[in-house]
Length: 103
Image 1 (cartoon, rainbow, N blue to C red):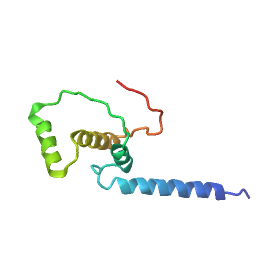
Image 2 (cartoon, helix red, strand yellow):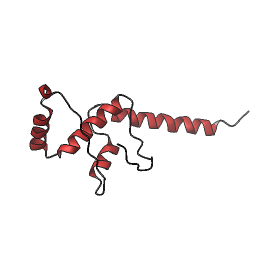
Image 3 (cartoon, rainbow, N blue to C red):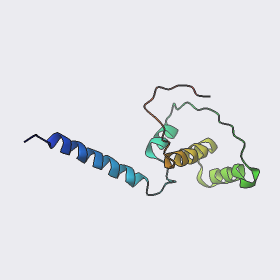
Image 4 (cartoon, rainbow, N blue to C red):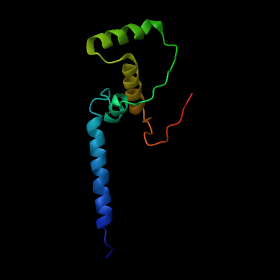
């Protein structure tokens, strides 16, 4: 009979990884720990993103109010919100990829 212990161990590891991921998604708007690590990194390089957004959504005013209430920097608010949205839609960052400059 073949030794299946290696496969059983791999399945347990996979199940544990999936369970850990599901714990993170209880609140889809909660910042991902990897995102917070990047944002809080002392030497994190930053890039500018510029997109026209509907004025009716009052995003700039709401970001300023959130900053005033919570002390989170404007760029970090945008980064956390976009990262949470894109992760929820199935587009997580590849944080292991070599750092390349995207435009």
